[in-house]
Length: 436
Image (cartoon, rainbow, N blue to C red; front, side, top):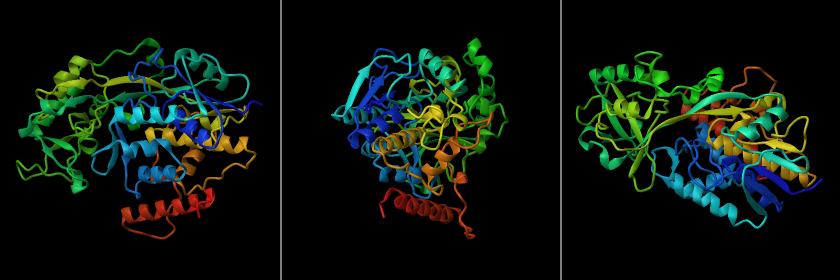
């Protein structure tokens, strides 16, 4: 069998897989349909384009995302390395300048002698050789039909992106910089509501007009809980947002000396601090309605929206039925899947799946046994989740401490307990990959 690996899709997962294979001396053909063709949510010609948020979640080791990024760093992740080099201030989170990040990933991939880049849409799955399918949740219609043929059907959910505004257009006297509980360096902009302002905003939001869904989308409409449109959340109750992305806990408005009734947080989009996104404001509202309703947020009355929120259809396969824990198809050992199409949810998780698919395939090509990832590691637990017992109700999963074995002794402080769990997982992973 030809040992040159075909990778379809140069997103986070595809680039990570190509990088890992290349570092192992294995030749790669990396197919990317951009710039000849773009999905509805992509605009840049660069690889690894970040479509929604620019945040790769928390950095601290005692968090699920921080633990996963450290595991990936240990295994040679390109994405984590590039993210650290292009980071912007975001409190305790690892956020990046999205353009610099994608440009750096693209440059690093193009510099690899073992990687041949082939531009243009792929419409059929190669019959020979090893293939990693990493086309993402926005796979083109033609190739999605190929995947559906291969897998015997696919599932779908809807994802949404938040708006971005310019800093210079904000009313500075109505906002304040602070990180929740004082964590970080006051990197977030906070827009504080009083009770009356919030109630008016809530009413306008739940009555605002949304973009009509196409008929084929209506059939499969199912909002993923982890990336819910803010208008859907608002309709669940007047206080739902106040216990979610608009929670005021850990913040005090310097103008009043009191905790606000609700708070919208804005997170920096670029290093210069000229652009900010509305945290938790993924939306399917019409653009005009976004301008009207979101301008009711204190400080945003005259906001210049450089990007409005959008909502798009995402697809993923029934991985527990189709894939093993190495991301290889159970019945087609030459085909691997990677990225959000496998049912891992989030940027870091998507990149992780590409890293692991590339790592496992490299070992197979070199005649080495499968790498047994410990279930105490985040990468091992997520691999187990997507390859567990088949179910009709399989849903995407992001990294979280709940999928790890609990700490055997009682530790009352949650942060201390999570740190112990993360340290245990890293020790076990180091032993598995031969780092100890």
